[in-house]
Length: 164
Image (tube, rainbow, N blue to C red):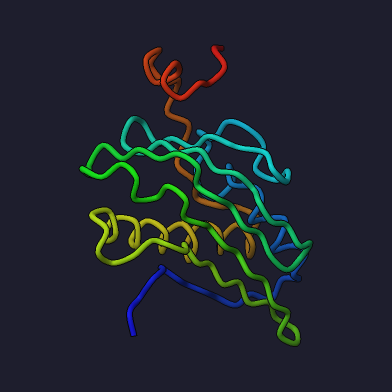
Protein backbone atom coordinates (compact mmCIF):
# COMPACT_ATOMS: atom_id res chain seq x y z
CA UNK A 1 0.00 0.00 0.00
CA UNK A 2 1.35 3.41 -0.95
CA UNK A 3 1.11 6.27 1.52
CA UNK A 4 -0.66 9.21 -0.10
CA UNK A 5 -1.06 11.49 2.89
CA UNK A 6 0.22 12.29 6.38
CA UNK A 7 -2.22 11.37 9.18
CA UNK A 8 -2.09 11.61 12.95
CA UNK A 9 -4.78 11.36 15.62
CA UNK A 10 -5.42 11.56 19.35
CA UNK A 11 -8.25 11.27 21.88
CA UNK A 12 -9.23 13.83 24.49
CA UNK A 13 -11.89 14.05 27.19
CA UNK A 14 -13.28 17.32 25.77
CA UNK A 15 -16.47 17.56 23.69
CA UNK A 16 -16.55 17.63 19.89
CA UNK A 17 -17.62 21.30 20.15
CA UNK A 18 -14.53 22.18 22.21
CA UNK A 19 -12.28 20.33 19.73
CA UNK A 20 -13.96 21.99 16.73
CA UNK A 21 -13.57 25.47 18.20
CA UNK A 22 -9.92 24.91 19.10
CA UNK A 23 -9.03 23.70 15.60
CA UNK A 24 -10.46 26.86 14.04
CA UNK A 25 -8.26 29.05 16.24
CA UNK A 26 -5.06 28.53 14.22
CA UNK A 27 -3.37 31.50 15.97
CA UNK A 28 -3.68 29.68 19.29
CA UNK A 29 -2.00 26.45 18.15
CA UNK A 30 -0.11 26.97 14.84
CA UNK A 31 1.16 30.51 14.56
CA UNK A 32 0.38 33.97 15.84
CA UNK A 33 1.57 35.21 12.41
CA UNK A 34 -1.65 34.44 10.56
CA UNK A 35 -3.58 37.10 8.71
CA UNK A 36 -7.24 36.64 7.87
CA UNK A 37 -10.12 34.58 9.21
CA UNK A 38 -9.47 30.90 9.88
CA UNK A 39 -13.04 30.00 10.84
CA UNK A 40 -15.15 31.41 7.98
CA UNK A 41 -16.19 29.17 5.09
CA UNK A 42 -14.60 30.18 1.76
CA UNK A 43 -12.32 32.74 3.41
CA UNK A 44 -8.58 32.62 2.71
CA UNK A 45 -5.99 33.22 5.40
CA UNK A 46 -2.26 33.77 5.10
CA UNK A 47 0.24 31.84 7.22
CA UNK A 48 3.92 32.61 7.39
CA UNK A 49 6.93 31.68 9.41
CA UNK A 50 9.56 34.31 8.64
CA UNK A 51 10.45 33.71 4.98
CA UNK A 52 10.85 29.97 5.57
CA UNK A 53 7.22 29.03 4.89
CA UNK A 54 4.42 31.11 3.43
CA UNK A 55 1.03 29.85 2.29
CA UNK A 56 -2.56 30.83 1.62
CA UNK A 57 -5.23 28.49 2.92
CA UNK A 58 -8.98 28.46 2.29
CA UNK A 59 -11.65 26.89 4.49
CA UNK A 60 -13.64 24.82 1.95
CA UNK A 61 -15.77 22.52 4.12
CA UNK A 62 -17.22 22.99 7.56
CA UNK A 63 -19.51 20.49 9.29
CA UNK A 64 -20.04 21.79 12.81
CA UNK A 65 -18.39 19.63 15.49
CA UNK A 66 -17.49 16.96 12.90
CA UNK A 67 -15.20 18.12 10.11
CA UNK A 68 -13.10 20.99 8.75
CA UNK A 69 -11.32 20.96 5.41
CA UNK A 70 -8.81 23.61 4.36
CA UNK A 71 -7.33 23.85 0.85
CA UNK A 72 -3.78 25.16 0.36
CA UNK A 73 -4.10 27.55 -2.59
CA UNK A 74 -0.54 28.93 -2.66
CA UNK A 75 2.67 27.85 -0.98
CA UNK A 76 6.35 28.67 -0.75
CA UNK A 77 9.16 27.05 1.21
CA UNK A 78 12.65 28.51 1.21
CA UNK A 79 14.17 25.03 1.57
CA UNK A 80 12.66 23.15 -1.40
CA UNK A 81 13.19 23.30 -5.15
CA UNK A 82 9.55 22.48 -5.95
CA UNK A 83 7.37 25.29 -4.61
CA UNK A 84 4.17 23.49 -5.56
CA UNK A 85 4.49 20.62 -3.06
CA UNK A 86 1.64 21.87 -0.85
CA UNK A 87 -0.45 23.55 -3.55
CA UNK A 88 -3.91 21.95 -3.86
CA UNK A 89 -3.34 19.72 -0.85
CA UNK A 90 -5.93 19.63 1.93
CA UNK A 91 -5.73 19.93 5.71
CA UNK A 92 -8.55 17.72 6.99
CA UNK A 93 -9.69 17.64 10.60
CA UNK A 94 -12.22 14.91 11.45
CA UNK A 95 -13.86 14.85 14.86
CA UNK A 96 -15.60 11.76 16.21
CA UNK A 97 -17.37 11.35 19.52
CA UNK A 98 -16.39 8.07 21.19
CA UNK A 99 -18.37 7.67 24.39
CA UNK A 100 -16.98 10.14 26.89
CA UNK A 101 -14.01 11.05 24.72
CA UNK A 102 -13.48 12.70 21.37
CA UNK A 103 -11.08 11.54 18.68
CA UNK A 104 -9.45 14.06 16.36
CA UNK A 105 -7.88 12.76 13.16
CA UNK A 106 -5.76 15.17 11.15
CA UNK A 107 -4.82 14.34 7.57
CA UNK A 108 -2.68 16.46 5.29
CA UNK A 109 -4.09 14.96 2.12
CA UNK A 110 -1.49 15.05 -0.63
CA UNK A 111 1.55 15.41 1.63
CA UNK A 112 3.43 12.35 0.44
CA UNK A 113 6.76 10.78 1.48
CA UNK A 114 8.40 11.50 -1.89
CA UNK A 115 8.04 15.26 -1.33
CA UNK A 116 11.23 17.12 -0.55
CA UNK A 117 9.54 18.76 2.45
CA UNK A 118 7.96 15.55 3.79
CA UNK A 119 10.25 14.84 6.76
CA UNK A 120 10.27 18.46 7.93
CA UNK A 121 6.49 18.72 7.45
CA UNK A 122 5.81 15.39 9.17
CA UNK A 123 7.86 16.50 12.19
CA UNK A 124 6.21 19.93 12.24
CA UNK A 125 2.63 18.63 11.90
CA UNK A 126 3.25 16.02 14.60
CA UNK A 127 4.47 18.78 16.93
CA UNK A 128 1.64 21.18 16.10
CA UNK A 129 -1.18 18.60 16.18
CA UNK A 130 -0.03 16.15 18.88
CA UNK A 131 1.60 18.88 20.96
CA UNK A 132 0.21 22.38 20.48
CA UNK A 133 -3.37 21.65 19.34
CA UNK A 134 -3.76 18.82 21.87
CA UNK A 135 -2.55 21.20 24.59
CA UNK A 136 -4.95 23.94 23.47
CA UNK A 137 -7.86 21.49 23.61
CA UNK A 138 -6.95 19.93 26.96
CA UNK A 139 -5.51 22.92 28.86
CA UNK A 140 -6.73 25.99 26.96
CA UNK A 141 -3.15 26.95 26.10
CA UNK A 142 -1.47 26.02 22.81
CA UNK A 143 2.15 26.43 21.77
CA UNK A 144 2.00 28.37 18.49
CA UNK A 145 4.89 30.06 16.76
CA UNK A 146 5.24 33.52 18.31
CA UNK A 147 4.61 36.67 16.30
CA UNK A 148 7.87 37.46 14.52
CA UNK A 149 7.05 40.91 13.26
CA UNK A 150 6.06 42.19 9.85
CA UNK A 151 7.03 40.82 6.48
CA UNK A 152 9.31 42.76 4.23
CA UNK A 153 7.72 44.90 1.52
CA UNK A 154 8.63 42.47 -1.28
CA UNK A 155 6.77 39.59 0.38
CA UNK A 156 3.74 41.77 1.14
CA UNK A 157 3.56 42.77 -2.53
CA UNK A 158 4.25 39.26 -3.88
CA UNK A 159 1.54 37.66 -1.76
CA UNK A 160 -0.98 40.46 -2.33
CA UNK A 161 -1.38 41.26 1.36
CA UNK A 162 -2.81 44.48 2.73
CA UNK A 163 -0.14 47.00 3.70
CA UNK A 164 -0.22 47.95 7.34
